[in-house]
Image (cartoon, rainbow, N blue to C red):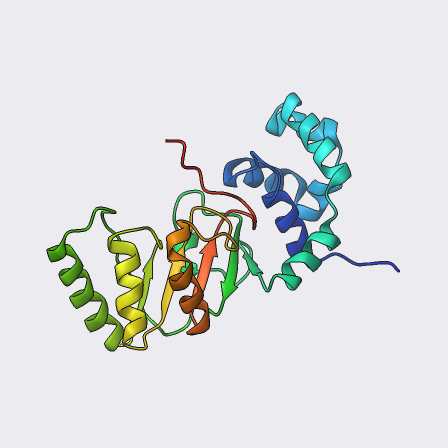
Length: 215
């Protein structure tokens, strides 16, 4: 069976190659005209753009990465994705320097709906006063119809999610790891509640990617 890959599939493939960030990817797009052409392009032609050793590593990666199999795995895990080139990509995020190539999503979200988003983030070592203030802001803002965005970290972040969920609001967690990985593990119940209550887990990192906690 011949499978016709869409342009977005090649965005997805490049996003899984370690080291190809927005800057290198933009160079490839400008030179080749599309992600598909770049993926199937000449390695020699890539070398001046991303470096000889990097191009060699990409050649090895390309031989082993099965795009269709990977997309099937995402569907099985109920993970969707949106590309930088698509209208569904958050328009405000496009305006920052070097926006992510891909956003992986687990759950439900319309980035460009009429809903307003507000981020609440803060210290992991939350005090009693900090908890009360976070709860006050999160519940008041969520009650007004705002979608509360945070990072599911310990402290202020998770309290913002909890307060929002407790009054029936919608909340989104932006993670520093794959969307199918709950970190810290202590917040698994909140992670599950976010998904159960029409919220979403978002990351620019591929599913399965662990958090970088070395620093």
